[in-house]
Amino acid sequence: MSNMTVNQRNQYERATLSAPTGVGVRNPRRLIILNVVLVLIAAALVAGTIVTIDGWAQAVVLAMIVVTTVGAMIALSPNRRA
Image (cartoon, rainbow, N blue to C red; front, side):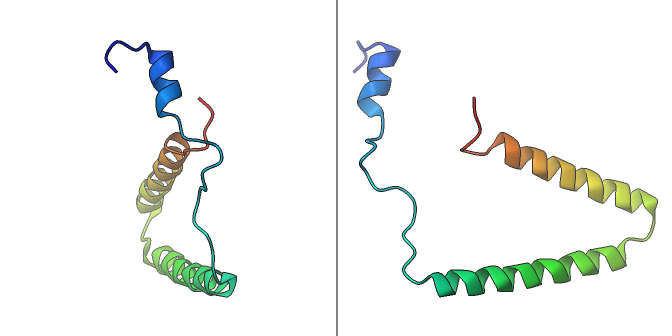
């Protein structure tokens, strides 16, 4: 394998398109219930955070944490175009 070019190695190691991908959902009702519960938990955490913020400086720090998190999600997304 060490004598292969990069293109040959990529072709050898690529995933086959006929292979199953992702996770199969057996019961979509459970997925809907999980999403509803997680949204309720997120809403409670956001409400608690808004109540706890004491001044504009804390709001700016929180906003930068959110911006950095969203930027990391975009940069590390597997569906991002190169």
